[in-house]
Image (cartoon, rainbow, N blue to C red; front, side, top):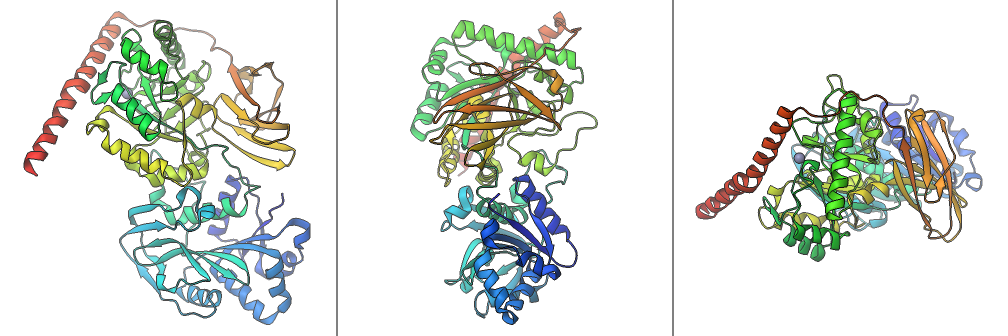
Length: 590
Ligand SMILES: [Zn+2]
């Protein structure tokens, strides 16, 4: 790789140093570690051999290095010619920071202070190339404890404040002897091996220990780093029937808004409703496939329908759901996206094993931890990945708008697609707050491309050019649409995490079955693409053998019917009346 990276350590490799290497590893960037005392080792690396070096270290280590420059012209020359840039995190000593900043700014005094309590954070919009999707973001009321900030008035031509709080800068870029030095005042670096305790990663809780380093790695290692070829997006609304209105969703109104404000909506459709779509709404879907799509939302949408431990039963359920969606298609002509959205977000490990054996290509869910009594541990790196691959079936994450645009922006920085979810009641103000949210997403520095949910899944992957001739691709869903965006014919080496390769029946591209092999929990395959050529790779699994659960009892069917109708009454009359009433009461009171 042409971008060598070095973690320069003190006498021991510290915990943050280890975490830093894990984050780099996540992005496919290998870092060497060298202790400061073995300084000759890394100094002997000449730039002409490997390109210039990216240094990552603690503040006191960099301070030691810069002081060495005062003694040794040779070392100073090494810095000027062989260092590409440096990322520095704080060692916890205010003293070190003062001295370091003083050297970096040419002995200009900078006030350093501690701040407590909630703070607003701002990401600069002056460094788009560095900040990417995070550029220009404002994040409100972040709980920061014992934070260190540098007085903003200290910013001058040698210093740009990249992330600031109300009181000063917490991440900044200096220019020292022509080499950019990025200094973060966070003492901690996020541990990507840490187990997730909430149902999704929230960047607001880890902003300063995650964002500066991720921004640096993506900027400093553009060739080595995994990247998503596209930032795609889709809004998902759970539950509606395809009737002119469902609760506060008015399909005609929503379509006009999508056209005016550029976005797409997928309806997580309850297969039980397959006979009930209204012709005028069906027409809207068929005439506007770039705006409207449908996915599979459970089967009957009963309570915790996909949370049970019976794989056979869930296999039958998912097959029944897909049959109903096919019947819906034969009546209406609407093709469904083969993507499962779990009712109430509840799923089990058995559900994931069952779904894998069907024609579904992925699951999309808010929650990432299964409902099993002893759920599998999901780590930060699992959820940072394009999709969670720890289960037998790929799980793409989605979020509510109130989780903040900053979370969507960080997901996009990681290469994850933007999948937002709402329920009909979010449209109760004629979609004013929805449009506001969409506008904020579309205003991100890298605006997303809005697609159907199925296409969002198919186009989600990460890739990198290992040489000008070869592209490596990591695949997630069981279908991948891959495009050669270059001007040369190229082989694409595709790999995908797969714990059970023996369950694969075949892998095809557009022209027929293709060869593949499996190694160390991954399957590998290769396809060749001409310039601008696109192919779809799909993996099909063997059906699940044995079937003891074919059919529902009459009482279950009656109960399901009752539940479906009651839910509709709730959405169409009770919730709408309650919200309208509270809205009008608020208007009267105000
Ligand atoms: Zn639902």
